[in-house]
Length: 500
RNA sequence: GGCGUGUUGGUCAAUCGGUUAAGACGCCUCCCUUUCACGGAGGAAUGACGGGUUCGAUUCCCGUACAUGCUACCA
Image (cartoon, rainbow, N blue to C red; front, top):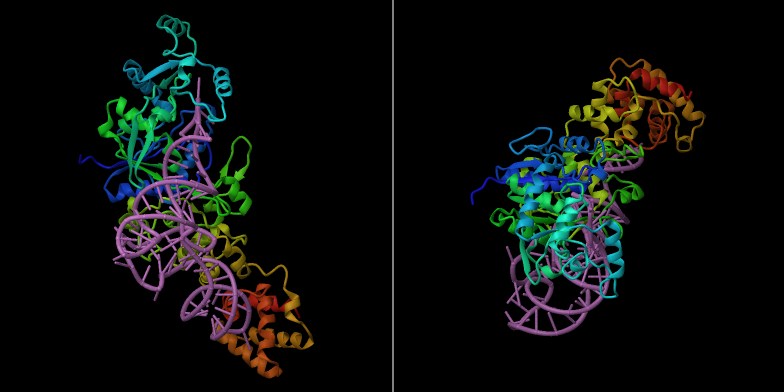
């Protein structure tokens, strides 16, 4: 029983990586690290009709950005390669055959039309959605309802077929979920899911069981939406003779949309103005790009921290955790059962915290790609960043909060300046005075400014705001003399000169 | 429709039968700041409903309501 902990994240490469997916990765990663185990990335690409080029690479890029890299993956390889189910296609038939031989599965020859007809004809007020199950399977075309000779003939003629699991009647199927405790299902209500598709590919149900077994997965985390199909998986583990190797399940709560209820979708993000994917995703078919947290200006550490707290908490008041701290603090038992509504404001708060805790040199490097201005001197950016960081929630905020350090404002909030001749005279004198300053720093600039205020017999408060607006364009930003200091003597004077 | 799961302030949430029901985000007020933020101090705001069990239920049980997920040869 002292098996090495092995967990896996098994996405289907069909598009952008949802933040719920990243959270699943995170919990997998934390669990593996805490137990000295392995974290496997397995690509579940069994649906050839949904193949999206680039999606797999994109998923790996997202994991890399988040700092949640797998120990084994299609890219890295590992002892259980290949890690793409499409490349494991040949493995699954054997197990389906085993189930067939044991009478736990059967061939079904029904066409799509047959299935549609059944669903339509069997539909009653009591059963608005008929299933392919114990109540209907004998009415369909399969190796249970047809006589043996006919089945052999159909198979021989190459008639397309699928293999379905034969779900038993009147069994209580129980499983223990690490988050929810014991969950049970009545097998009579479970349908005969397709295991092997007509194209020879397994469905998720067969593939997940076979691969979790073959890859020696010990703990399986997945979204709550999988809970209803868990009995199928338990049955498969049992019928394949591996029940004592079945991983411990944990069905994670859903991440819900902020308004109303329901699963958070890409659409909600578009509608409400926040990202849902980890990184920008461009659909190769439509060319449409959906925004990601990375490009919106999130630090990966903040993104990960925020996700960790969405559905889990340590039971203490600590909210800020490094990845290492999360590894120590995280426990699957403390994951909430109920879904959590995503709160973008709180997400921004986390990012703000991380921005404050990042030193200016590192922050400047992070911020540079988001700046519009060109030819930015690193030292100057570093000083500017230090001055404005406390008012930035996203990396992209620095462009609006610090752009004026590098580029003179295009427009000034003239209404707030209340410009008049007195002010014009004051700033003319100020420009001259500043020009003669030998030492340029916050203190000398303010001293010079004060001298001119006294000489002009004007109230300092009357010219402080105009000075700010001349330099930054509007009523925002850090201390005005500190700004002038960083902008530099030459630029400060030239910005004043434009007004006189 | 059936089945599963869930339900503490607007949001994230603590509580493992006894509390003035924490804390955080957001919101409001005040302070600080010759701008805006940051920061500081306050404030408003919570156990879906009905039954039990118990000396005592937010906490345990049952029911109802509501929500959500699933019910594909998709994952």
